[in-house]
Length: 98
Image (cartoon, rainbow, N blue to C red; front, top):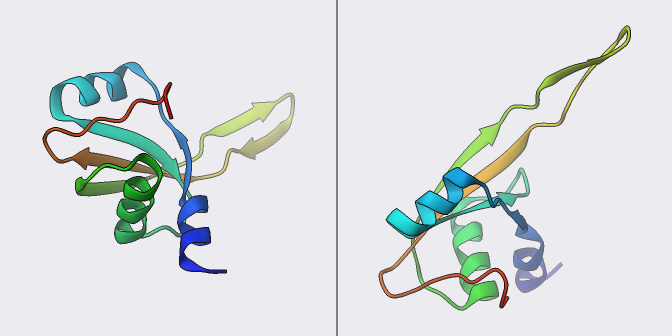
């Protein structure tokens, strides 16, 4: 698999919530769900490639899956990785137009 193919698979989806909308308005940060083995440089390159913007910094965290029960069966949701991407001043991501 070539590098550009890998970068196209790093970003899974944008996380559009109240918190992420406030981050976008106040601090020019955007939140994405990414593959669990993605590194910060890969996430930066993927965002720059897909949205043609310049990234200032990337912060990541692993969200632990919740424990769930259905009747007497216990289970858990999968862990997933979240990336907070801060763009350089003057750049913006428009999810609707992308």
